Length: 84
Image 1 (cartoon, rainbow, N blue to C red):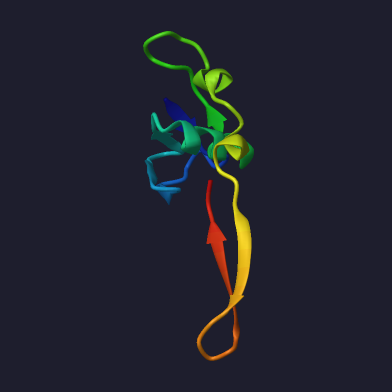
Image 2 (cartoon, rainbow, N blue to C red):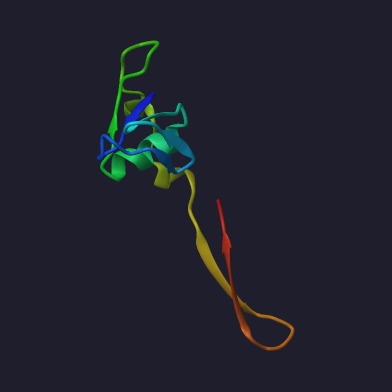
């Protein structure tokens, strides 16, 4: 799927996707959602012509983090993240 940067002249890498003259490409649904949330325009799927993000569940539903605080051997507080 084509990703269009807000700056049409942008050449570089954003979120692991290479851009040339403001255009990049990825099929990673999580990256597509991220780009949409950050003001990039997303093209249509080459195969179907449909916007595939309409079939993607809310990414927040796929991963829930919780913070767990405990004491380490030195008696200091230590926080870790636990995923779903």
